Image 1: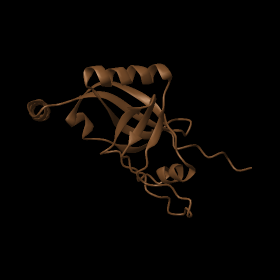
Image 2: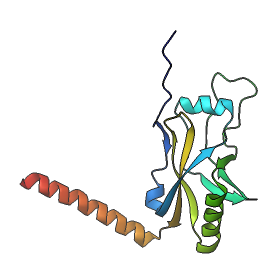
Image 3: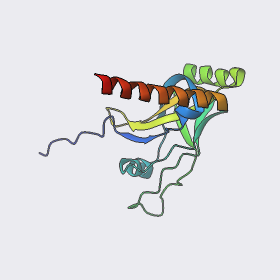
Image 4: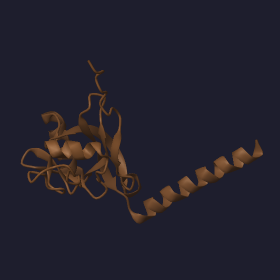
Length: 158
């Protein structure tokens, strides 16, 4: 009998790098995603994109909107829509807490990372975030530049 193939554990499929620049991250959560079969096969090829997506609370459920999972190349006419809305799976308590934070504090639900966990299930790392102003973004850049310069100086001196 052939050895059992390990799932793609810990494999990052897509990452939203601009999220940490544009938003101040308050808290992060892990959510499951309700996917179709061809979407999972397409994710395994590693061409998903969550850069311009966001999560929305509607009718007691969380939805991932505007994420792009391309059609599966070997799929047939029953292939999925690339930019369809996908339901996020979380506990009722977490969903209620997130919806209250969004409604009350003016926060946003931003996807940070799409990955396979150790069991081979597709998961989404979701952040509760507040938008940064332009001066906050400039301050973040200054700190990053200073840390880079500081490490260069320390490396050169000793």
